[in-house]
Image (tube, rainbow, N blue to C red; front, side, top):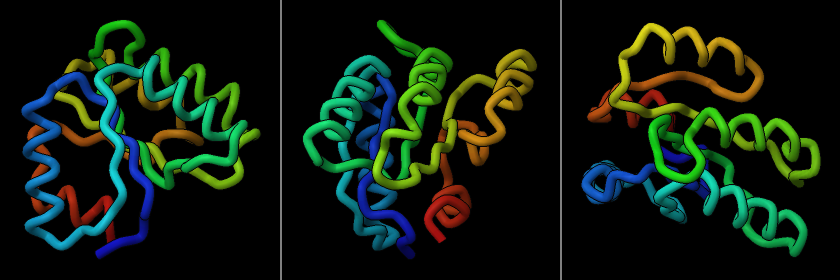
Length: 131
């Protein structure tokens, strides 16, 4: 059930990190995952890796509401550097927000965000993302 190898999980919720790890393991999704608690840290690693030939994620699972740099700010920065990355990166927004504003704002990133999933992620969501 893998179409991705390198995955960045950008979310400040450590409980979500734990649940996601368990859900992936239970469903035999074998990936190399990197967890970040804010968009800034993930962006810094992404920029550094792109310059030094490090791991570039195939997939980013991105939360909206985080400290330092939220998901929207991350997407704005990602748009600036995506052409410098050596491979395409797929982004899924995964958030507890069902705000109309957030659901509409994601439409501003049609080339960058594949889909928007509500927390908690389910087995069906994992299948949609990884199959």
